[in-house]
Image (cartoon, rainbow, N blue to C red; front, side, top):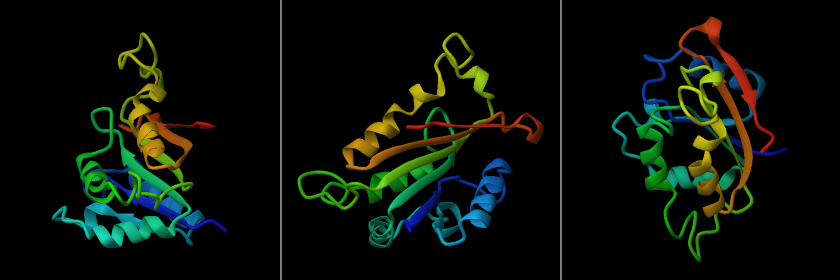
Length: 167
């Protein structure tokens, strides 16, 4: 059985989210054996225990990054976590082999519905185009891009839709 690590990168999960809370709650119900890291509550000062985080990553077979899509990318908290934890010599570089072969899945939410993420749509590009930096991040770390789960239209519960990629 694969060891799954789910990392929530929402900057204020308890106070400013309903979609991400629902997704994480559901994941905990269907995958109670997974390890869950809530960056906002575990590191309210944004000072990460890098060694602890790197060990979590080493011990995982599948890494799920779950976050709201802020300004076409990961939230600032998750970005800082990535910058500090995924360092040369650990995740990449000639000696950085700790994550080679691990699967990366991204699960993200957006207030805008999916139809806005199309060529000619309000956002100008399909969702997949905004994920190129994360795909390259996975490649640079030797991880396997295992696709994504996108939940759009999250401004209201009634408007929420989900889609996942094959890869």
